[in-house]
Image (tube, rainbow, N blue to C red; front, side):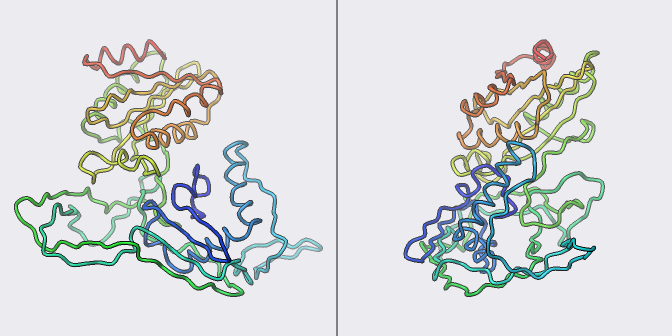
Length: 368
């Protein structure tokens, strides 16, 4: 969870909690992956939630970075014990590495954990409705050193490089709240879904569990997409040929799941992740504009054109709009757009019309 402190509404996306009579109830949503329910991770989260000063620090870091773009916070811990590797120079002691955090106190005697995956499995002879097959024929992972950014689902690597010691570890109860039916048989009505290969790894795929894919621009020449996003790329290529346009870059990504719009983050088959594309256009006079397109599957979802004459923290704007889109179950959030426009940024909805890409490109260029 601490890897996600810069996300908006982090706790609400992943869990709710209640502390009563020195008992901590953690109700996780399906967004919180079951592999992160290990005791050491739950205990660390409980330490954050049951200590007001720690929780205030956690909340303040993300807020300050979003508002002021500074990594700055007030250190509120009045009771802590660490073992560290240090360097002394006169009266100055520089901490080089924290080795262990000792005497951590969890202010709860019992922790109850609830998660959709905590179910009692029951075998059934009923027929499977679907099966998922990976087209990955290789058992190993390929490392691509020339790729930028990191993939969304990194192999799990322990981030607990610091040793955590507690005064007393509460009793941890993982509550099974339902039953999971496992169907064993298949027939002609069983649908088969083939997942894309997930072998590719980049050199950035280290240091965290399920790192969210970074918003990294790439060259148009390096893009391979199909369907509706392929047409979007063709429009960007036409725009790039315009005299008054200096450069065009693109981001291709997958919508992340959120608390209200999980269904929209996947296509109608319920398996494939819905993709988006963002084109950033730089004019020869230095102005920047952006276009955002999302796989629609027949939905009346407009393309967004975003303009500003001032400097814009584009990646922050993209994150706000895409998260709002998922939270609104496939509609651009008017509330988020209003907040953005109050910053002097113009947001236009460009409806999809059944005309040639040359006509569409011309209309977009006219509005830049």
